[in-house]
Amino acid sequence: MSQMVRTEVAEARDQGRREALALAALAVSLVSFLNLLGAEKSVLAIVLAVLAIKGANGKRARHRCYLAIGLAALHILTVLAVILLFREELGQLVDLLHKLG
Image (tube, rainbow, N blue to C red; front, side, top):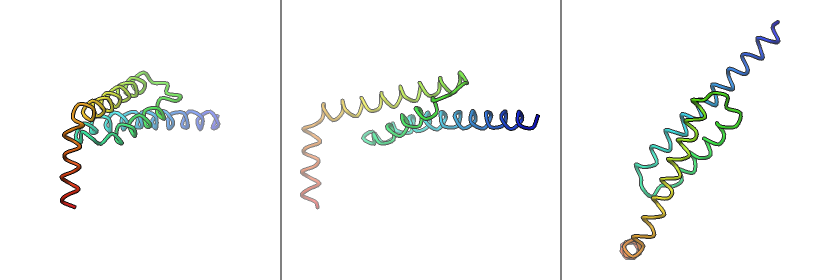
């Protein structure tokens, strides 16, 4: 009987860990929009979401993971679009920073 209780406790702990990873992934993907060119936070959000989605039994955790992956991917695409659209201005900014340094 105690083995069954231990198994249930371990499963509950693993499910809680996945829920926490999913929530962390969602939070990081939202925070990544605060600094537009900081795509590393989006990559971290995707990694956390993938870790959380493996073996996730709960519908809520899986939904949060997909939402986090979507938001992080949107952020990465936004960064790429900004870099492509404003590459001349970014080049000028780099030149000015070079002159200052």
